[in-house]
Structure formats: structure tokens, C-alpha cells
Length: 148
Image (cartoon, rainbow, N blue to C red; front, side, top):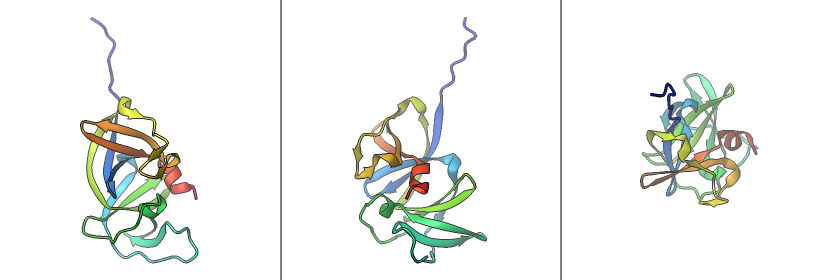
């Protein structure tokens, strides 16, 4: 009998939709998931920055992930959500087509991202996960938020 314990590393992620693809971000970064609301435009910012919103007293910059990834835009609807992310004392909202669910992904299932995946630049991706019949793209949050 071995005293060795096997620990299975899992990553808890929130799965969200952009166009026809499913993406994932670690749940640890998610502060909240909000319905689409009024965003105040800010002049002379990057085209993917929609503006800012007042979220419970905190002025939060909002990024349109479709614009960030060069995916054609669509009208916001009932499913549209803002994922409020907190990273290194920075709070930012990202607009997504819908937030699907929270799942645990075994770390060993994360594979390197292929060079082209749905037109999204590979630098924004941390990897790809195949789970059952689903395929998720795991985002590299630092690159998505901090790189212009």
C-alpha cells in the first residue's frame, strides 16, 4: 500500500459564447456576471473599448470582446452579458454573447492553442480544451486586457 496521494489538478472556469465558439476564463478572475446595461462612451480610446459603466459605485472600463478579436459585431440581446473581471487590482468588464456555465476542467486536458482558431490571434489564447463533445478556448487574460 502506497502512502502516495494522487491529486488531480482541475481548473474551474466559466464558459461563455462569442459567435459560434465557446471560450473559458478561470472563475477566480470573475467578480460578477451582469446583464448588458448603459455604457458611457469614452472618446479617443481603442476601438474595442466600448466605454465605462458605474458598477456599484466603481467606474469600470468595458471591452467588447467581439471587437477585440475582430469578430463581426451583432446587436446586444437578452443573452448578452458583461463578465466583470478583477486582475491585479484592475477591474474590467468584457462583453460576451452569453455566459453558459461553470465547469471543472482537468489541467491535463489543456492543449496548446493552434495557430488559427476562429480568427482569434493565438497570443490571446492560453490553450484549447476538448471535453466530451465540446471544445473550449481558454483565454490568456493578461494579453486580452493589457495588450493594445
